[in-house]
Amino acid sequence: MKQLLLFLTLSTAIFICQNASARSQPTKAVPKDSLQCAAFSPYVGKLNPDYGAQPSKELINQLLDTLVKETPFRCIMTYGVMNGLEHTFAAAEARHLKVIAIIWLDNDIAVNSKSIARGIEVAKAFPKTIIKLSCGSEVRTRHNYEFDGEITRCIDELHKAGVTQPITTIDTWWEWCNRVSPCHQTNFGAQVDWIGINIFPWWENKHSGVFPCTPAEKAADFHIARLEDVHRTYPDKPLTLTEFGWPNGPEGGTEINKRTQQHCSVAGQKNQELVVKSTFKKLTKKGWGGVVFEAFSESWKPSNEGNFGSFWGICKGEAPYSCMRF
Image (cartoon, rainbow, N blue to C red; front, top):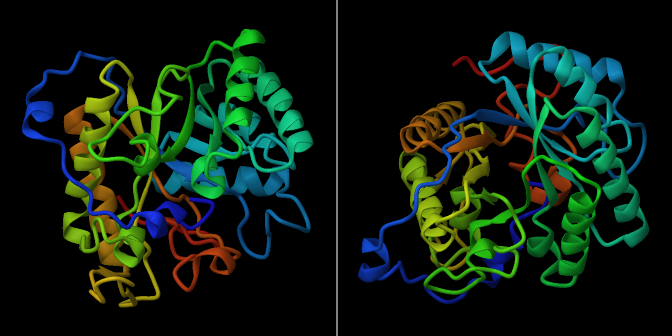
């Protein structure tokens, strides 16, 4: 999650669950994909994606070695294809890791063009390692509908270039429901090959009047319920839970819902472990893939996400690196 989920602050109407007839409608069988992945960003320590030094090849190699040695994950999701991040793909291939690669899109059109071109290059250079692609991550969440054209341009250019991997644009479950209830398709439904969905009850607990209270022990069920909402809406599309997680600290820290004043989010290592493991277990039963957010904690994030921003990693973001035991 690169930015705070702005859609939650905009969601003032109470979300109405799918009606009974929608629940009873059969969905078509789609290919199953229960791959378990970790979101990988090498901006650890003092590194910041907005300025300063880029992640080095050596650092990326060190972080991936740690992830392979200390966790069961053999798949990662990356957040860009430039500024040093392009080294990730060769490093992943050398370690037999699969990659979901995000072509980062934002409000600089010229930079987007370079990112798309570089995304095409790496997709073709690593066809066995990069298994899926995304044109942007939470572009609508960050910019409303202003850059929908950039997402479409990216998808079109990848197709025209002969990129063979499945393509999506990753966003929150609320955006994939077109910000309406019951869930409705967006204009991207017909353009993408698969649906990449980010779901964070932690942020819902802070900002939302829709789902204001989901404790850690119910987070896995929340993830599955939102995925099922989207799956009913796009029955022909494979889906992946592209971001989910829970902060491991500050230990015992809690968020207060701005609308209800409820204390339903409590940070800590046990709660993070519970959310991650129980969610992957339920995803596997459903035949869906998932990406835990995130592999390594990033200390720059509090500037965007508050006190809990630097505690999302299943691995520490400072050397010597160590990870949650699975």
